[in-house]
Length: 388
Image (tube, rainbow, N blue to C red; front, side):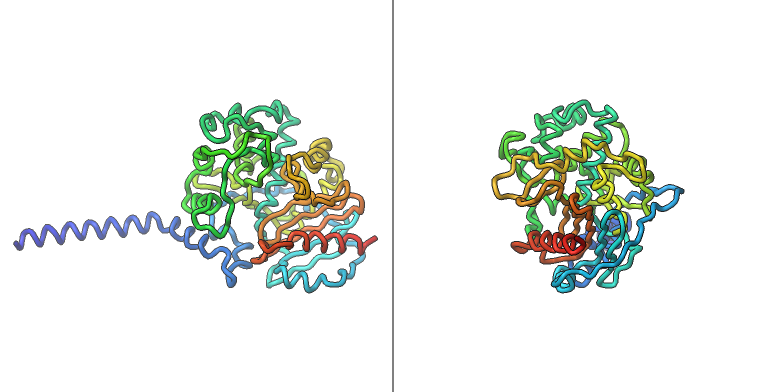
């Protein structure tokens, strides 16, 4: 009996040691998972949105050694009536307003500062769209109407087989993807856990197998479509998205600070929502688009791509928000008005006719409420009109 008890104690000791080793080995993954689970909590959300590297794996991009591109300061404006209440109600953390390339208003809120690198969420999609236009012009991608599996063979047999690059840019892939942030088991939340645990976004996307419509037939906002765009660009160029963005956009535009991209455990950038920049750099990007893709005399993004990507082209239903190539337009938008949009109040709003760019960041936990996007667009329009 004594021998049996001794043997049992040895076994339990080994199990305990293995558990301790596993806990140490997985400590970072468990820590990230816990951080993700509290990412949007009321008491942490503002801090988290300026410190995403504490919750996720990240890849830094270099802004280079060149001078920071200046943003001239113009005469300050008085924000229109209701703007201060809107800033409070919508938990705005940064607001940068440009008119004809000059900063006319810049303010930071809820304890954040100009130096914060702020999470883009889906505003990142519009950056990837810009990169698509650059790569397309360079010839690495032959046509928007190429099937995605031409550049990403591992998508053969998945729900994405037969969808074209144009389809995924337009969010008309027809792939089933549950984007309910309140459902723990939704696809979007499962994807968040893939990131937190250092697993593969590519494998996750290639594992989707169900469609609800033929590619190009109908529009439905499906964030994972943007990851497919990123896979196509990587497959076509043999380069990573952070490296391409750094070379063709970040450094030529003279951004203020080194951006960060959230990545999965295999180094693939979270292109559908993982970009982290200073608020003024979001504004610079918007100004570059307003100027037809040029910045300080250099053509950053092809002018024809700027026009095509910000023109409604997706098969949206009548009365819905309009959509181009990863850019939004309001149903009543005049020509030249479009915006990038991310959850919790991230926007780059562009009014070409007025020469206005508005970049906002936020921690708006009420962003899902009916009419909030309309309220935000109405405020942007009011701010733009106040400078007429």
